[in-house]
Image (cartoon, rainbow, N blue to C red):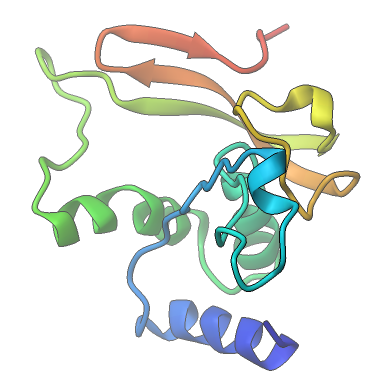
Amino acid sequence: RTDKDRQAVIDGLADGTIDAIATDHAPHTKSAKEVEFDIAPAGFIGFETAFSLGYEQLVLAKKLSLADYVSRMTTAPARILGLPMPCLQPGADADLVILDLKARWTWTRDQVFSRSQNSPFFGRQLHGRVIGGFLGHKQFWFLHPA
């Protein structure tokens, strides 16, 4: 996409025209991607970097507040899809992530949890990071807290 396209998406998020953020997270195998462009499957892995890239480009760039950004990645998609709203209530599933907003890290291939290694962001320094969380009754860690 062009820079104009990218800026139009940012503007749409800032003015509310676009009300949700999601990732396709397309973990295609290396052999599936190493074919002619017109027959290669679209997309790349994005789950591990989605929060950090948006945090940098939207929150740190002062296009969205942190609360609006988190809402666009959580409650807005749930509302659009008619899913139960995420909440922190006694007896409810604990669907949440643990963030380190001060983290500065470089995305490398050895940090990939996916079956694929197709990302244009390898080697990029990122800001903010999901370090773990809870999904239902299961706890997970990408990075163990110090």
